Image (tube, rainbow, N blue to C red; front, side, top):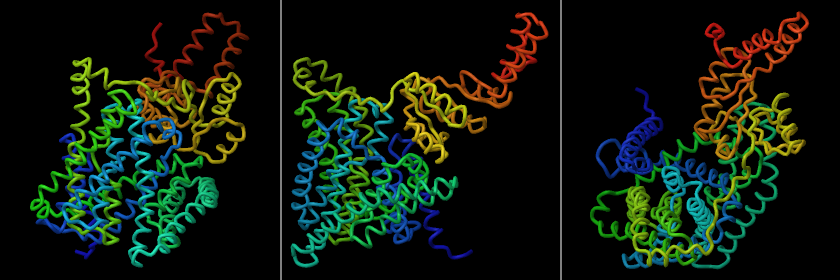
Length: 575
């Protein structure tokens, strides 16, 4: 057998992660728990096969880049602005207080000041991945409380990006015995990088994406998206001395303003998920179970700070702002864990010599415990609300609605989503526009995209068969979906995706054949139209009239033609 250490390590890591993820889901836990435990099993501190950590670590760096690129792609100023009253003061005050508590814990355990601060900061930052998964599982993602939790997470993410810059400056100061000059240089480089990206990058990256999109090659588009993420991160690190994570985040932020951002996100999703798994496995490989067993008291103390301290402090903060009890409980449950950003901060601390591997192992143990417990916290929200309501005096004191944040309306409401903009789709979009009916065209041809934008027709660039794209089309709030693509196989994929996003939406579709109409009807399309047949139907009507057929005979024959277009077997027609 060939000696393939890289392939062997990655293959075994993926299998371990698969087994761990399946077991975690069977137990009702987030899959991240399974990936972390898989890393522990693959690490050097447990018996059995030991993966090559250096190999996994380098691949994990790609996972960090794609994770942070995705965070930048999905960053939304409007989402943050809508819940600014709770997210900004709440997140910043909670991060400060938990960081102070973590610093005190680290100092009590004899950690260096830098290591103690990193312990506190790591404990103060929750996982966006775990939060979004929990909110979706509980059906809370689009609720006012869910939006408040997401806004809170956005503020923490931004604060973490700033912390990564400060870590670089801190390392520079340490390298020259606390000199101020290296700190200023490090901060200056970070500012220069931001300026270059927001001024030049905001023009170059969307331009390159557009040029490659014009080639209509899916492979080239995926390659330019990957190159934008990885290339910017590497360039930022090599030329400006900032972290890979910060470079990838800014690259995603720049691309998010382009019309291609949703398709970039959809195309990179498989890569992001796969390499993120390797990132979590690499994190788990650093966990030393023997050290944790010998310091179980520290594990319990840190876990208590993350789970009990953060959730209690978050709930109190929301009560003081003030907001409803339900919002306070949802946001509190959503913050009572740590995850990928804590890992990134911890790894930076390792690289800078501020943390030892054993200390980092303790942070990882806190993550595993808190992520494991987090789904249980969400399940306690309803019982706690019920218990509080049974005590009216306490409920009235806590449930104050002074500045309740309403659910942010989607960018479009009661609109018509039109997939495809050939002659049929564009005609529909133009007619609806004249009647002031809100519409959104989903189009994958960049040339058509430019024409629609010139006509001021709202358009979303991307492949409509991808659930990531249709989710951004706001199907849950749409009144109608019109599929104009002639290929019924592609239309079937779009119908299945649409039904998954919005099961109750009414769908009209185009079909070019009887078989296509039948298959689309079976898939759940409410109305089938065959444009090629409509001309024949009208010609048939004129022919029958010229032959002096009765109106009844003419109507019957035309009904038969239309039933065929709807996918009804003409042989099954009776009467």
